[in-house]
Length: 160
Image (tube, rainbow, N blue to C red; front, top):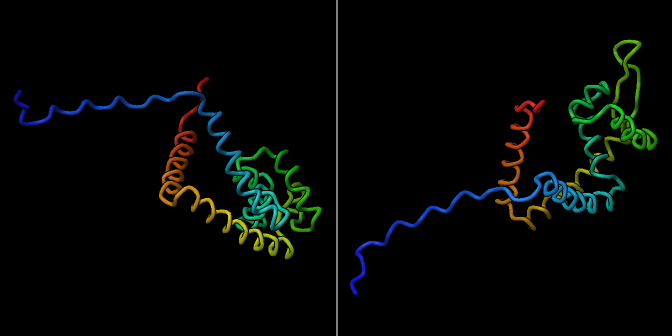
């Protein structure tokens, strides 16, 4: 039997459809990645990654009003207040008067700057280890996809 001179065109694969719950998958991934980063940063500095993030935002924005910091971190004001308490107690963050009698200002102390620098070195080690485990190209694709998700979720109004 004679074979055709050319192969028939391959059938296109149907696009993959989502299976399962996106929220569950994102939360599972978040927990595992957070365990990795917390494991390194907390072991070396005693800080949770959320506390390191707070120190970083305050360093970049400070002195900053609590409402502005909460908005920048997408936190509820009550959550921000609760998360700041241990940092204030350790002497890394100070709450002071704001621009007027009704406002407050958050800033890092010198000890807070030093703690942030220490934690930054730990974060770098955690990030490099994550990149090595996942592969730098995959991490870059993940960042791009997450940036896209964040943009789309911010741009799309919630259904009513």
